[in-house]
Image (cartoon, rainbow, N blue to C red; front, side, top):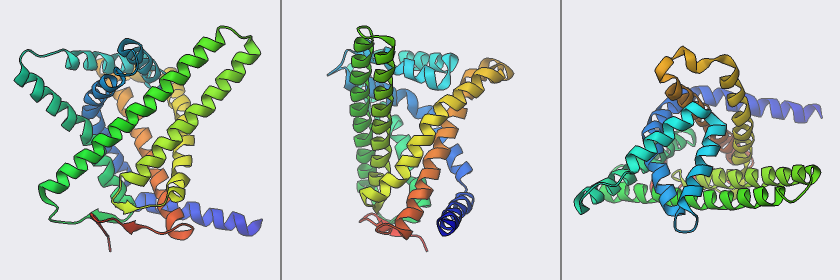
Length: 290
């Protein structure tokens, strides 16, 4: 027992030390910056994709309801307003084409930054001389991640709708059981999403087992943070300190917290893979950092 505790302590210590060496707070700040400008086009594209299989009005309402639970009413209204303003149709086919291209570039920017940050943590970098082909490949991979996010949200919306319908026909005890099942399913969905991010986004060959190790930690603290950050923001009057910019400040805090959890999960993935897994091996576009 003592030996296991010592091993766990050394593992945690190395993760924390590397967290500081990789300057994760700076990486989180950079990702927060890109996310602020990417979140609107990202949501527009996802809502558009969902509209093929799900009622767009219901999807939008449910998405913004979930956003409100995470970041509060004011920040959710800020996002909803920007999405509404940005999604208003432009006249002319040329303006529409330009708008679509701008949306795709803007939405994929956050995944490009996330990829670069994960590469730093996993001790790899993209090879030089990849040219335009490499840039296009990165953007396509980022767009695939957006499509995957859309699929995850569709599954989440379907499950949430089913739980809401069933809850109306059962008693309080059964409703609690349904909500518990809903929580577990949502946890699994988020866990799968983070596993895919760690597995596919960095320029490495990473086993699913190694990716899941960090994804489980990330999901646990992401779900926990949803309640803790909401409690903190709701009981400290944080928004009033920044006045008109309070909604934006709240949104930035939530994004920054989430980025730290994602990167800490990546640190755990790195040490788990190098010590207990199948090691970190660069893919065709990457090379190890000395």
